[in-house]
Image (cartoon, rainbow, N blue to C red; front, top):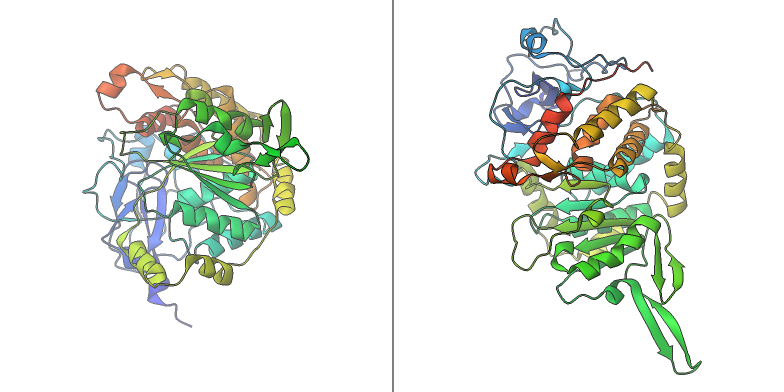
Length: 445
């Protein structure tokens, strides 16, 4: 039986980090963003149908190749032939990149052409229940939410790791829809707080109310008493309102008038901030930024994705009804907590612990950073790597998991020096260069 030509794929190497990428052959000639280094590459034309799958990445991971070795390795095999040299490593983002100017972030460059979302081939293990649930959740989300792979995967990793997420994006990219959809799929309560300049701490936590019948004060819970909380435009409120979230995010409890009230678990805060507007906003304090496990960036959709969004949501059907009728509940809070506990048993080898430690500690010595990442960043990076490994059916973490989550974990925990800001240095570019300087450990499965 002949395969559908639309199902064939094209394989090529990223010109920046030489990561091995795979996209549908129908996207030839379009621009694609490398998931490892965010470089923009053009999908090459293929004279012959490419293989429909890449070979599974090796579980024995060798140190990153040097610039000389990387330049001698062929990037793409001849049509119809297999590459004579395998990819440099399972963690291609750690190879030294050629001397090329940094690629601007798509949000920073409005002239950037439409970008195709592509995913790197990962080390996949057994078909476990956690992996099946992760795949079903992402498939269910795609029924109403298009694209944004980093946002979806990062938020799920944070949820099952007991962390929180800060999303930086322009308005109108569907963040509220995404969190509402996630709450319906996971069987969790959803709440939303619109942060404004006049928002008070008691508007978040709740406050005592005098009961005329009992002649006593009773506590009225605030909107924070939920399980999936969307803190929309969090940087539009002053510092005293931000301070009300510190105890809530770290200890999952609220203390009012000396009385402590526990929150229901799981508890996930998804906060959003706008990277463009600065008028009427307040910078989040470093203490609160450190409470977020990841800082994710939502990007504009590609041309094909935006056409799909218009087709999917261009009618006048009520969104609440669509979520109720089209989205299936796949889990419950107890199941989420069980998977979180099971993910903590994923094996992290001592060499991988040392690898994480060296990356985090190097941020404190990097010349363009006046403040590096805290030990909490290393803890979060290890927890996230465990959860990501469980999502892919493995009972052991690999350096690829660390690289995948390094930027979201570190980009909001490091601060540029004044000189670096004046020079227009980009935090993500500096972190990529930092990660490339750390040798990749060898992991035996």
